[in-house]
Image: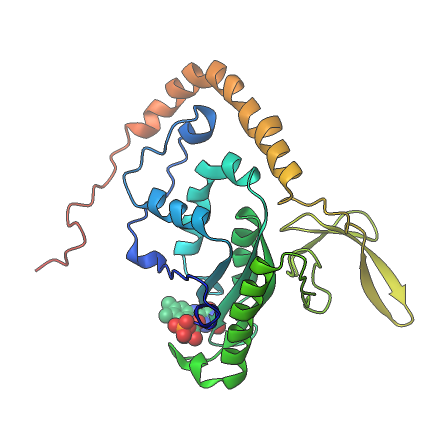
Length: 270
Ligand SMILES: Cc1cc2nc3c(=O)[nH]c(=O)nc-3n(C[C@H](O)[C@H](O)[C@H](O)COP(=O)(O)O)c2cc1C
């Protein structure tokens, strides 16, 4: 609404209003360059994603992470990997909700993954905590922060040279803001989400991570995405074709298993 007040054209999409089917992993989209065979609304969503100059991603926390439809969307974006890697970055933001602090470990990381895949540069990202649906609206500070995001995004679109210093959580990855690290050697850490690298340095009685990969090289950089796509994903195709006959033979006994078909079509038994 704040962006609208600044005369920006705004579209709000509620994922659950769209008919979205889960990816079946056939890989026809990337290996054969075909449009997805699933007959649903993904192409409609994609048109909106392409149209936008900036995108705010939002989700409530359900069971420690964002609502499941977020992962479903992420998987379906695989079809558009190549197109996305060729798109310029756009400003974005992440506004999530959760009932309780420390009950949301996967919420920002998953939304940051979606943001990275869509090549958004977040101007802000945060979780607002309140237990009931819509209750965050009672927090003036939260509403103000969201309004600020609307204003900032419009300003960044109109003045691309206007940059925003994004707060990272304490000890968080400066690239994606999350706190999922893996040790790589005695004092090296790697962000599991974006693959930024850091070094653990002792400072007096405590330790801190000094991030070394501030050179723009990370999993979601256009170079890394294009390389992953052309040097790995596409190269697996011809190898798979050679192995396919053998795989199909081995898979048959699993296909022959009796699979329970859902005949109720969502209707509860009477
Ligand atoms: C199915 C379900 C699971 C939930 N699981 C969590 C959870 O793991 N952690 C948490 O902090 N909140 C959890 N919540 C609470 C919601 O995140 C909370 O109600 C949130 O404020 C809703 O946001 P909204 O105002 O955007 O609807 C859950 C809510 C539902 C309906």
